[in-house]
Image 1 (tube, helix red, strand yellow):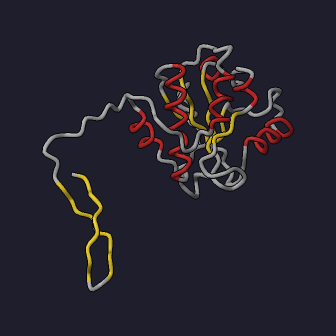
Image 2: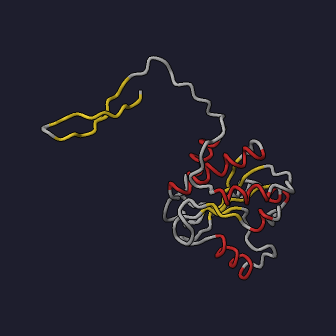
Length: 196
């Protein structure tokens, strides 16, 4: 079923009403067709992704992380990872998705590791993974709709460039248990919807 907008004159005022019409044949949709527009991935971000693919390592998966803080951005996390955690390459993620507190809601930021095609520090499984960090404390609140939409777009774009990559959460690579995505992040739902 679909809705067709129309208008009707009720006591001298024109109000828009929606009329539900039954379709006689199913709509033909190719769900595998490339996305036609990008709400969250700006042209600048897509160019940065493309530039990071020049020395294309053999990426094998995408791993979701949570920042554990309600406020943040790629720049803030980069400083924290460099100065506090002592990571030599700075920001420990390839991409950061903002929540509106520090970076725009649903804004995808690329990190220096992506630009340099550097792996994330960790074991061999981490080194072949693209790391995406959602800004937020997911013990107290859920990710925003903008963040989830942006992640879907990012996965679509990476799939166009690299082919299908499985998506998993931090901690599940080596059977570990990480709580960085918290209890309020709908991990199972996101993984189900991305399973294409």
